[in-house]
Length: 197
Image (cartoon, rainbow, N blue to C red; front, side, top):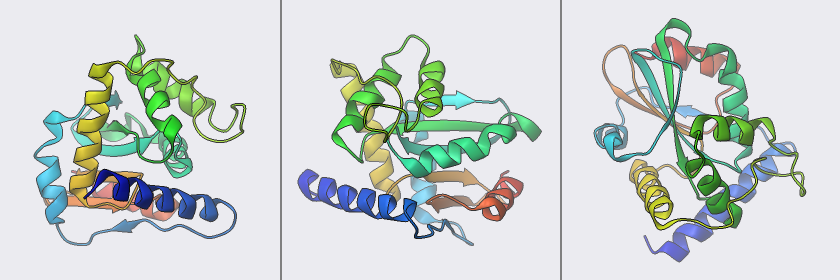
C-alpha cells in the first residue's frame, strides 16, 4: 500500500477512534478461529523492538501508538493483571496516528529506560499542553536507528492487516494464533486473558 494512502487511512481510523471517545462504543473483535495474519506475524515477532512488562510463559503482544486513547485504556485495564498468573505483555511501539506519534515513540525508544519512559507516557496521558495524546515530551531528534525500529514495527502491524491500534496477538491454549483489534471491554479482556496459552 502506498505510504500516503496508508497515512490517510490511519488518520481516518484515528478520527473514528476520537469519535468513539465522545460517545460511540468501540468493540474489540477477537477471532474465534486461528487468524492466518496472526500466524504469520507471530512467527516474525523476533524482528520487533519491544517493551516488556511482567515475566512468564503466557505472552501477549500489543501494538500501540503513544497517542492512542484506546491503547492507553488497555494499558490502564492491564495494570492489575501484569505479571499475574505468568502473564507477560510485550508492547510493540508504532507510529501511525498523528505526526507527534513519531517523536513520542522516539522519546520512548531513545530513553535509557524504555519501560519507564513508556510508563511515564501513559501516566501523563492527556495531560500535555493540548490535553490529548501521550504525556511524554516528544524527542527533538529522531535518530536513524530509531526510525528504522519504528518502520520495522509499523511493517509488522501492517502485516496483521489490522485497521489500527491497539492490536493484540497471542496464542490460545490450543496453540492457535489469535488477533484482537481494538480495545476489549472488561468481559472480553477477562476472556482473552483466560484463553492465553
